[in-house]
Image 1 (cartoon, rainbow, N blue to C red):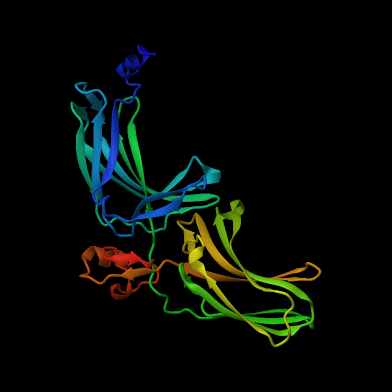
Image 2 (image 1 turned 90 degrees about the vertical axis):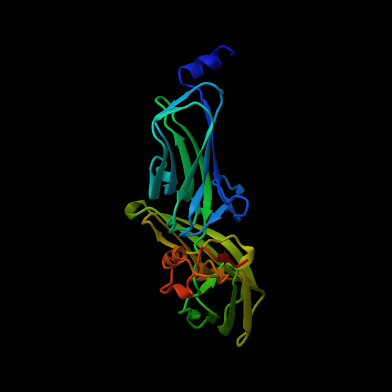
Length: 340
């Protein structure tokens, strides 16, 4: 064993250097919890669209005094979508490269500065049942036989402004001569820490309802054409009543969204996937028959603006946020924080 390790490194098979990526604002930058594929939650540095990503790449030689020949050193900023049924293909929607060193050799450990200015990060980080959208930095020391590389994942949140058009939802559930229910929700677009306020009116009740609830369903759609996959997840259940209602009765609804793990609505992301949310009204009668009525709602992530001078970077970035048409009403990444 002791003879084998030097032989490996002599022929270039062993890793002769370590790489670290350190962000410039690592001490002060906020972190956000994000779920990985295996369901674990980890904390990652949090970024917004339009923010600069800068830092240092440390290349540390494992064997001091021994030269490290390389074919160039670079760092990349990548945004990519991976569909789990198509693991070999990574669909990159952001791909930026900075060369840190030309081909040559390192005689000692070295640090390289990098900066990706006003980086466009158009989509929210997402890990789902069949798809993953991730952003990461990747530093690479090019080698003749085997490159040495290191990745650092970050999380991106997309902030939106308050929607100007936010009409209430009114719907009816009816079975001829048996049941007639109207239900109304105060709006159709909710931020992730909002409260769904509504009311249900029983206009005609001739079947014996024993249970009634509202579910929030998340529907993840991946693929196109014949290869479309739908995954439905019940994110929340809210029991409206347990027992029989009577004609003329009205029941109020207050459903707090903050306690549930949800993302903003994501529509046709890079033509690869969508994430949509639905309010699902479920009635169950005494013979265990189930009646459904479903309505799509839009979820968005709210930001608190701490108003300072608006930088050029912020103006450019703010114009990319969904629903923003002028900078005054948009979130500014350089001085915006999420509403917590």
